[in-house]
Image (tube, rainbow, N blue to C red; front, side, top):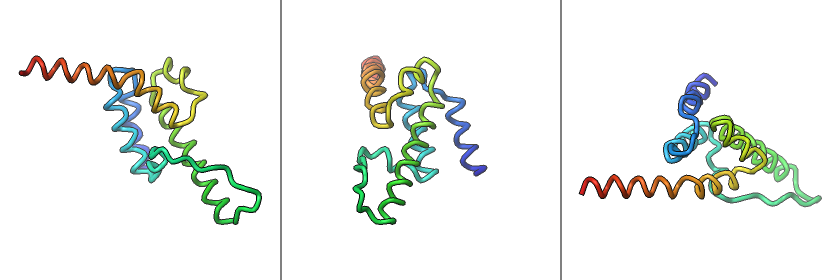
Length: 119
């Protein structure tokens, strides 16, 4: 637990404000990998279980949903308040997709400008 808290302090010190999206995204992945929850970011979404699901399937689904919630809360807690409000009703994948639309283009442009200045 102490390791988890110390790594999460990285996110407190580097909240997502917009221009730092790439760094924030990398930090989120590091934290979730350390907590063994990064698999929820792979885009695979489990379907709701049928009524005849086994106990093992029900337990696996419950763990997945708990990990998905935990990842969502970590992401929201590490955002600036205006971004939290904008994303609080979204699931993990929708948050990531929306943030990429908002900020990833900006980071590509900055990288291009820096490269152009260097060369």
